[in-house]
Length: 488
Length: 124
Image (tube, rainbow over all chains, first blue to last red; front, side, top):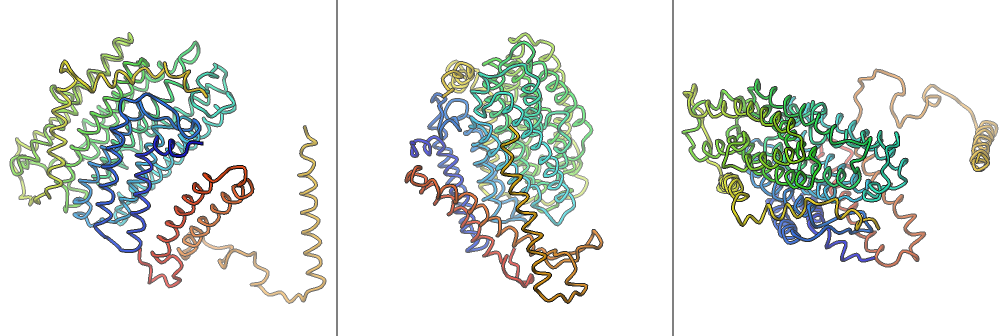
């Protein structure tokens, strides 16, 4: 066996796992040392470096066919590590501000990141399950970080119980698929796929487990409560990194294990779920007063847009989903970051939209940044959210799913109301009681500004004639073509 | 097909017979002076019957956690040790990595005071 080659293939994950262990050792020997933060940041930068280095390489297997690396997986790793890095940057200041700063949080974040990379790169149902569980268990703990408040306990318990339940579905689906095909290797499952009832039931249960993790309607019930009770910067981590990892895994499973055939039309299933998710997510978000709940429903709706790209089921659709997850990651972390800034030191109740009245002019940089992120989430050009939506809807239209695309655009139009409502409070209402705002640390402010710049830059970059990103993504889209190579 | 289960049947019979024989022997040979506490089913020191909303020491869970660390180690190491000569040196390094990971977990829980029986000293 080629151990070094295997480790090199999973190098970003190995680095973050190792850093997680180091953080635990530091934390147990010396409580609340600032070294934990720097170990985390350094390891994530190293992981980012190696992920970016493997961009553009073709898909290949490692660990005796248990994992895949390169290709779309490398891009997934980049999204995951970028999301983690930005969340760590804003968490340092925020968690200290709300008096819930524990060194263990960084260890949990690093282990969850390792799990996400394992999940995104899984080529076997076993590694898929291990990655998913490593990620989820760390997230359950982080959801309950504010354990002395009711909402924190509610978030953790709800997330854990429902998450464990959905994992049960996933595992049962895996068992049935194994029973029907006699293998746990994802490429081999694709080759042995049939319309046998056993296989269909297994595939359906597997997808239920996945759809729970991306909070698609009707498996979305946990999302608002969990997002509300979790510390805001970690909510950003939940909403972006874990979702990106699950979507990459979903692309890999759908494109290679579940070929579209007569009697196995999961594209139809995904179209219906995408429509439900977009419509429900946006309509319920309209009436939310709490910003975190609003962003939770908005994240449900965004999962719906990404599902449109999956429903298209074409290489173009897959690369559109990859781009969408990247776009969603940068703009959403930014939005949560600014909200975390406003509510810092004022308790969880401060995230009501009315409390933002008149704050836009007080701290102009934060106000403008939040406006950019919200415009981008609403899908207004020339921001990255628009480019993302454009690609998924274009993919749906090219796959002759015009109705789906039209419903998506209409739902997206409805969403503009609740994003703009926040800006109305920020800029067009008087401050009804004086709110003292903190001066953010340089790191915090810098992170938000960089995210805002990225939101703007990647909104324009794809339409430039020499767009490297889209070319790269288009080269990943054709996952079906490598299927035969991957079967050992 | 069914004859494959024959050894399991034999094992079950042996287990039942052995249990009966041993309990009878200890009853015949040993002294028997019962009281209420002795006749209680063994529940790790807790009252087996009572209110559902009872308070009990969190230490039970902490010790159970320590137990899992060693338990997993055993489950994983035994099969590896038996087949070590076929598996080669690479698996030795892999096993060491696994043990180091468990050790880090153990170190963390010990430093947080899991085996400190005075709960006031818990440094969590």
